[in-house]
Length: 171
Image (cartoon, rainbow, N blue to C red; front, top):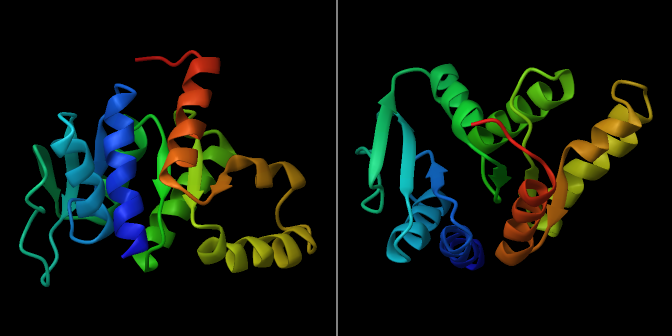
C-alpha cells in the first residue's frame, strides 16, 4: 500500500542519516520500516509484545526484545528513541501516540520530535483536538506544538534531522 511504501522509504532514509529504526516488530507498517532500515544496512530493532495472533517479530528485525506488557514496551520506546513517528494505524498506534504526547506535555520524557505521517489520515483527529479539546480549554494552544503533521517519509525524516541538528541531546 501507499503507507507501506512510505514506511519502507522512511526506514531507508533514517539509516542514511545515521539513525536506526525501532518498531513494535509486527507486520505491516512496522515491517516496512524495519525492512527499509535493514535493506539499506542500518540498525533495524524492535520492541515486541506477546500477542495471541502474531508469531513473533517480522523477518527484518536485527535486534529485538519481547515484552509481556504494553506499558513496558512503551517505556522502552520512549526511553531509547530519538524521535516518535506515527504512520496511519489502529488503536495500538493511538495508544502509543497519546502516551508520547502526554509525556511530552507533562515533561516526563526525553525530548524528541513527534511526527504524524499522513495529513488526510490524521486530519480528522487533529481537527477534533483543536475544535473540541482546545475550544473547551482541556488543552492549551502550545500543546498543538508537541507534534508535526507531514505527508511523506522525506518530510518525517527532515523533521527528525532538523530537530537533532538544532538540539543537543543527552546520550
